Amino acid sequence: MRSSRFLMACRREPVDVTPVWLMRQAGRYMPEYRTIRARHSMLDAIRTPELACEITLQPVNVFAVDAAIIFADILPILIGMGLDLDFVKGEGPAISNPVRSPADVDALRMPPTEENLPYTLEAIRLVRRELDGRVPLIGFAGAPFTLASYAIEGGGSKHHVRTKSFMHAEPDAWHRLMDKLATVLGEYLVAQVQAGAQALQVFDSWAGVLSPADYRAFVLPYTQHVIERARSTGVPVIYFGTDLNGMLPLVRKTGADVFGLDWRIGIDDAWHQLGEDIAIQGNLDPVTLLAPWPEIRRGIDDVLMRVAGRPGHIFNLGHGILPETPVDNVRRLVDYVHTWGTGEKSDG
Image 1 (cartoon, one colour):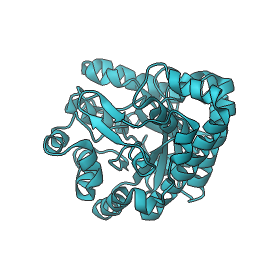
Image 2 (cartoon, helix red, strand yellow):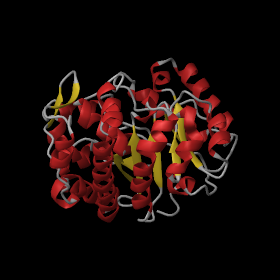
Image 3 (spheres, rainbow, N blue to C red):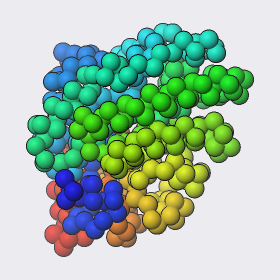
Image 4 (spheres, one colour):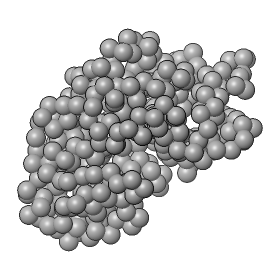
């Protein structure tokens, strides 16, 4: 796998063509996925290694993507810590006993990964066997702040009022919560590599709601701990967050090997802020994939022209594939990226 163009790009080594994979590449836009989900809940699909393996492989079998990412979710790790999580149809994740007090923080358990998430580790083992070296497998986890936000809010939130209020009103309890989460998440990522993951991504979906000062004081040390533990395995680590473009030099301090960008910044501007010695993943707006092909092509061209041949670029979206995305648009995107700049540019 050292010759994998995805892993080579993570290491900023020259590649034959730009590698591409897509967040949520196994998801509701694929009829194969919808067929499985019609019979199984989200949690059942995650907790059944054979189903998680099948879903992980669906896009690899249909598109020429350069990496697989294990089918899982960032939130089930909270179940073993003592929170009652469910995925409510049409509403998303919901926690019925959220963290609202210092006593709630202290009550959170810290079970070992093999006890808490054995099904995801087994799914990773199954996928590695099925892939048989075709492409690398990415494991992942949420970042401490994003997990803390879900735990405190009880689900998704627009303004994260409860989370930020708890952070400022109960700083000691906040730091205990983040310490617990960072420890559990770090060990989870290590366990995924031991099970067979060949790269890792840390999702910090909500960190962009913070000011730079709050990110530095209340979040960064714990994110650094998680990434340091993940990097100790020797595999590349990607850090992805949204709305973080106003503090990219601070984000660089997380220590990740690769930084995933949303679509709200030019990739060349981000490289200038992060430093030319770092790898970057991104960053087409996912909504672009709902447009006619000429518009999609223009969007891809814009990203790749801004990259300007720099080593260490992995093409991806600025967030996950939307459920309404036509399957053929995904196929054409992957093929077009692979032929861009080769003199054999494909229009799919």
